[in-house]
Amino acid sequence: MGNIHHSMSVNNEYIQFIVTKIQKLVEELNENNLKYCHWKSNYLIAETLSGRTDIDLLIDRRDANQFRSILSQLGFKPATTTNGDPFPSIEHHFALDEESGILAHIHAYFRVITGDSLTKNYRFPIENMLLENTRVINSLRLPVKSAELIVFTLRMMLKHTSLVELLLLSRYWKLVQREINWLMEEDPIDETIDLLRCYLPSLDTNLFLNCVAAIKTPAPLYRRVILGHRLRAQLGLYARHSILRARLEGIRKFIGMFFRRSAQSRKNMVLRNGGAMIAFVGSEATGKSTLIEEMRTWLGKQFAVRQIHVGKPPSTMFTIIPNLFLPVLRALFPGARTTQLDTFSADRDLVKGPPSRFPLLFAIRSVLLSHDRNALLLRAFRQASNGIIVLCDRYPSLTYGAPDSPQLSLLPISTGRNYIRRLLANIEARLYRQIPPPDLVIYLTAPITVTINRNATRGKNEPEDYVRRRHARSSNLEFGRAPIHQVNTDQPFDQTVLEVKKAIWAVL
Image 1 (tube, rainbow, N blue to C red):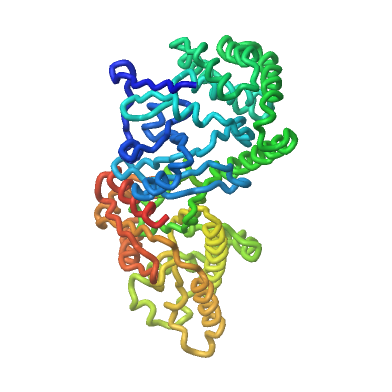
Image 2 (spheres, rainbow, N blue to C red):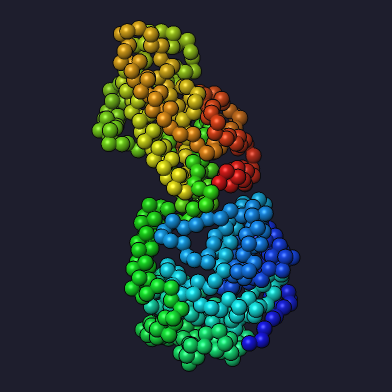
């Protein structure tokens, strides 16, 4: 079969690189003469190059090492899935585009592994067909539409052989219709049949043409399902697993996807470098919650991410019953509220009095809180060790008396009569010492006047003296050897977001 090479004019069809990182990758691939193409879903190529979806590159296996070297030079980081064994001959690589803050996702294929989206149960020997029959649009190499039509038809019809896949397919069926009309705009069917006979000679061409018509017309669902099963029977020699094993694997992955969505973690992708615990700290009204939500949305589009609030940890089995009585105890003993320590820490003269000035109830509550934080952060540490990116709203520091840090060591305990308080202080200190350091601290700062103004316009609207005390107590936090990136949030929000993204990506 002779090569079919097209170089399309920019005037006829034009795509624009919006993500600079992707543009640089394509330039490097072309300059080094690597054999590649963006092999599927080119109907949405503009969306792909804007970074809104992954970039599906088919790479000649002989160029694999050079391809990975180029990715590494451009700052791409390899990733893998946690939901079962990764697909063979497929790799994921990510890089931060430092101009836009977009994460570029390279979905690299060295074999055509495709079929239904959950199991990709087929390996079709059509790599040369796609790599040798290409067109170039604005420097990016794509397959000719006649070759892409083969890939598209096989993928879509195989999805009709599984109930789970049909449910997924129903969400974007209108897009499927638009794509096949786009692929057939130039009436490539004769060229498509020639390619099919050359690269998939065992496939009945009449069956293939019926499948194309069933998608384009479209045929009734039952007709498409029948054709899909007939196609699957003819393609059985290219299957990676038996039908039963593939079906069970698809069901398992669908269940896993359902539970991840229920847990508000839709992705099962983790970086090969591992996960991380990222702590966001700072005084009130410096933007911790807002920035964490931005980072969760940004990272959560690609990776397994968990967000926790260390300032308000969930109760454990040990503390759940005492914590249930907290509202009542706060009403009965207002002087023992946790916020009272702010006043004590703000004026050290107050701590020169007898230990009884610090209620025992407050000490007990501090220990319970340290226990809950310890349990939450140890659990988060295990998750980060398994690849999850954990975003922590607040984090204990080494600065005694600082927010979310040990409090009882500030108590003036010196006499034997205060054995219980001393014991509680030791327990609290030990629980905080057991908490592992974060992988990165995003230390948010802003001038006191800015935080007061922000506080006045937000829902919490804490008293001004409380904001001033928290600002002062958060001005000198220490985290040992944990790397700290200080961010002044008194700047345009977009600049703050991009700065935080760069800091996080650097440690992942």
